[in-house]
Image 1 (tube, rainbow, N blue to C red):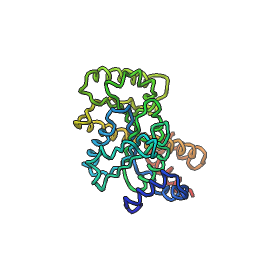
Image 2 (image 1 turned 180 degrees about the vertical axis):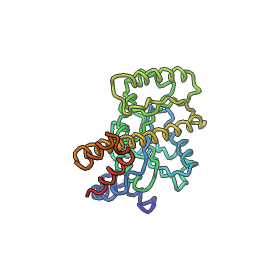
Image 3 (image 1 turned 90 degrees about the vertical axis):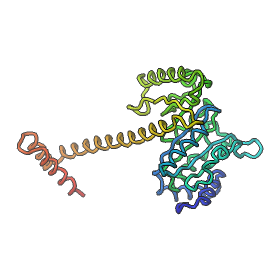
Image 4 (image 1 turned 30 degrees about the horizontal axis):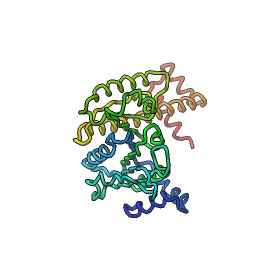
Length: 300
């Protein structure tokens, strides 16, 4: 699998799904190869167009030369326990693409919209070298909250006939969504739904309830996935969110590093004298910085 063998990946996923013996050893073996993939979850009510949107997103990513893995979580058959719908049927344009790996998974009784083994399957796909992993949940309504635990970004799809923004708030989607997409936006009621969502999102963002990301007010996008309208905007928002999260990490690292350096400076006589020299104007700030860094870098 680590060498790019798709059949090996498929067989390992089957092991994970069936919870076969040796699972703990398998997951320990892939651990050093994790952390490269970006996981996008797509959720929403049945019939909202999740499969179509995932298909169009995949086309956009492939046009940019990206490799994509897709997990399509379907309801379980009461007779076989397997996936009922088989989303690979709805993504036929990618089935022969060696750089797209599609796996349908059955929920097998899980009530959170995801199969219980989804987290381990994501790790396998990450270790296999797929930089983008798209997850389509089963579409079970108000219980689809597991996706937030697995995805870096959660896209919630609604359609005009799926109800107003109050219903979205009742379902807990304000806590789940990083991006809202109103699909089938050419239908009657789409504009009013988007307006209601924008109002609800802003109220939620401005409320005392701390948002997941301080500087991210959930965007509301219009789309017609069937006609590939609005998909480029969705991918643009996803990339903007990804870049902003990196910027957040860079800022946190800078602040933390600066705080630790100042604590060390104040607790060290030599560094303290340099700080005092800068404070008294006897030494310029750049020279002081170079002295402090040179002293810190000499420490074991």
